[in-house]
Amino acid sequence: MKTFFSLLLLILSISLTQAQEIKKVSIGGYNYQLGDDFLNISDLNKVLESNEEAHRLFYDARQYRGISQLLGFTGGALIGYQLGKVIAGKNFNNVQGFLGAGLIAIAIPINIRQNKKIDTAVDIYNSGLTDSGDIPTQLSFISTGTSIGLSLRF
Image 1 (cartoon, helix red, strand yellow):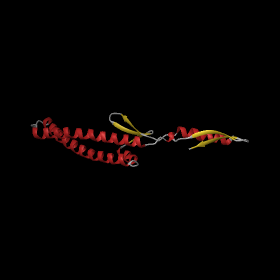
Image 2: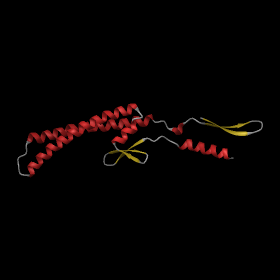
Image 3: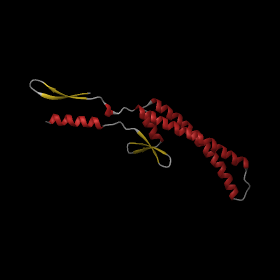
Image 4: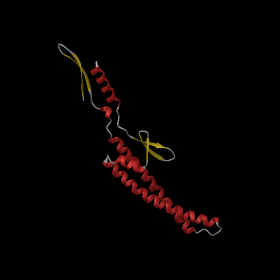
């Protein structure tokens, strides 16, 4: 009887286990969640290391992120400096103001491309997971002349 319950518990545990996939959660931007934990960029990098193709794509996206942040920060600083001058009562320098707006306009599509590459890397990672609940198992009844039993094959 103990072996029957052990076997039943084994079958249930095999059928209920699943690999954890990364979920995209949109809360004022994209966040990624693995199980109950939210992942930041460095945590996401560690998770994606197990899949070479997803990690390479994520690495490319990180390079886009650096370029986008540099352009966005520089453009924002130029516009902010000019707005500060206007508030102080000085003249607005059109060249610096429009240069800052141009840098921000260039940074936005680069940032969008970075987000798409990260999403693609997460999708590649998730598609590479094998669902451990799909392990082919076969449960059969065996009877001989003197006994009856269960057979579980993996």
